[in-house]
Length: 271
Image 1 (spheres, helix red, strand yellow):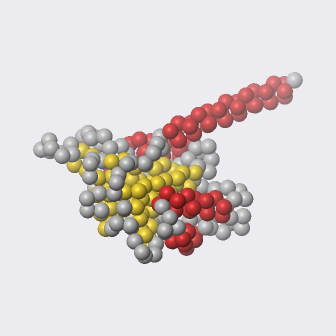
Image 2: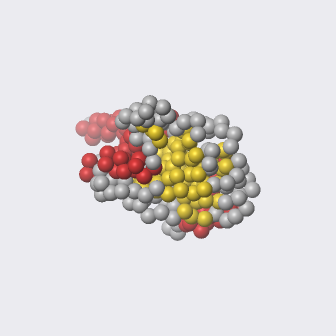
Image 3: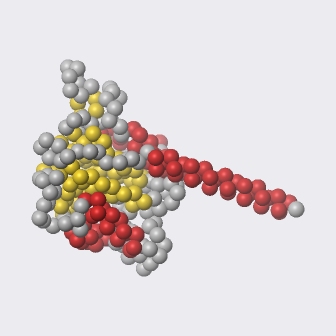
């Protein structure tokens, strides 16, 4: 009788935890972009696949003003509730609201146009706000960039994150290599600004390491070369179709057991 009562309490507790995880997952999904911006000179698409109920990945994009569009992908170390909470927290901090405490856009001193904070300075501030010691030894990698839709220049910072993929019009996909540290490892370190000049027809892909590190049943990784080949194969398709095909290729690669890490892909094309 005691064992039956204990099993009943355990089943009830498991059911409550499962319900709470499902509710938390719905909230996390609701914080993702609800659509894509209607910008005539830009096609943008994204996809997102958590490996568990809650994800340590987060992505978003939004206009900072009439000229600039921000985009980022965050990947928190580990899995589970703690990683998910940190991912959501970082995502909520990265908002385009103009205020003296904003990370991305601050009021100008002359009271005219707001000042857009450089990507490297954004990473520096995040690194100071989220040290590993205060986050249960969790850290995160991030790529954050700002597209100037007049000049078509994309300025970005990549903090320990997989390299961006640039697909020049009529050319082959190539990595834009960077070497900055992840957010939270060392307090006070400086990050570097990087940039890529885009032209009509060019594409950029931002993604989490769940793409190249996806494993098949033999524990072989999907890898950078397969990823680039998949992107190259879909160059004549829309950027939305291209991302869908890459997403499908990753899922098929690890179809037996499913992805062991979150998969996030965000891409855009200058039209």
